[in-house]
Image (tube, rainbow over all chains, first blue to last red; front, side):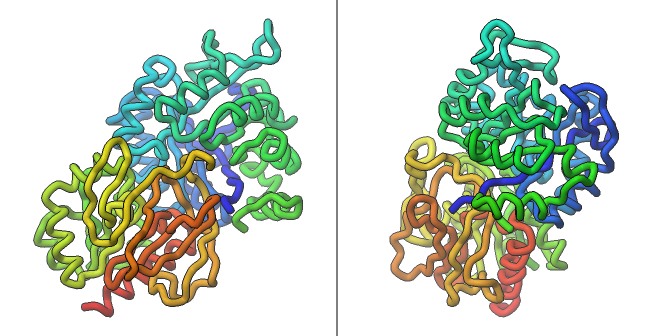
Amino acid sequence: MLTKRIIPCLDVKDNRVVKGVHFLNLRDAGDPVELGARYSDEGADELVFLDITATIRSRKTIVELVEKVAENVFIPFTVGGGIQTVDQMDELLRSGAEKVSVNTAAVDNPNLLTEAAQRFGNQCVVLAIDARRSKENPGRWQVCVKAGSEPTDIDAVEWAVKAEKLGAGEILLTSMDADGTKTGYDNELNKAVTDAVNIPVIASGGAGKLDHLYDAIVDGGADAALFASITHFGNYTIRQIKEYLASRGIPVNL
Amino acid sequence: MIVVIDYNVGNVRSVCNAFRYISCDVKLSRERQDIKSAAGLVLPGVAAFGYAVSALGSLADLIKKLASAGKPLLGICVGYQMLFDQSAEFGSHAGLGLVSGSVLPIPTTQIVPHMGWNLVTLPEDMDLFAGLAREKHFYFAHSFYPDVTDTQAKIAYTDYGFDLPASVQKANIYGTQFHPEKSGKTGLKVLQNFAEICKKSN
């Protein structure tokens, strides 16, 4: 049986791992290569690196970072942030990333997902969705782009369904409302998306305690739970997380 | 020297990194001379099947010839799928035909891609799994799988709602649907075992 995945997320800015609240107020959490290697050794199932500056200058930096990470990390890792073309994806995959994630560029040009899937296979193509609960309609979520700074009129669930058809192989679903709050994932959002698509969904945003991860998997239907603060700052180890989930009957790779 | 075949698809560097990490002599190359003189060949692959086959181009015949003559060959992921006769991914494409079988889409009764760590039952008589427990988790990321019809192939299965062939061995030809280079310490052991196989065969 396929196990549920436990995924630390490393937001990278100026070659450092940072973590904020609601995408703001960033706090330093260490060196990305060291932290990545530590998580790989500790038994994390996968890693996600997000270049949160995503400028032209940082493009080169992130490729170099991916190369260094790949020399030390023997678990799969995804790289995202500012990727706009299949050639950029190719460069990152060739540098050692297993998957690439796109957000804004796919909203601007949905065909990018298809081009990428046809070239690399859809298992390499992760669609990142930053979703914010609609103020007018609390049962819906709107897609935000440009690192969460720009809301769109696109419905998050509809976008997920469309992206699957276009070629996305996985959805990295971040609740902007929950991100950094440590009060739990938005499992209504997770459930709405996991019910609507047939590709794996990574729940993201809001992990603060171990039962939050359990809830994302059981109530949210997520295939993987992503988090940052709870392990970056030493509150929990990967092993503690997995042992906890296993004790509650969740299949994990221990 | 193990040669990882460089044919312009993703993930080639990770495979080399993993061999280097276990202190194994490895070279990434698409030069025919390197390929001919290698102790063993690795055909990696993060790509769509059709793209991979056309990117491999004329090297396909060379690899086929060397593998048929006994040189150890390890196909990984799409490289594994390419060992078989044909694939139905984005059209119909011929593979290397070294192991009989067809590459088919994973039934959509399952979540597709099959992505993550799954438990593989490891038969004792498969050389890649020497020294490992009889069941281990490996990392998978794929949407197609080979339906193996070759009676000479040994097969290790994983359960994904059906018995999915996770690895095959047919004489000197080896393949893994999972990514040993991304399967932590267990995966590194599989690559170590392949390196041993290459040493013994030379």
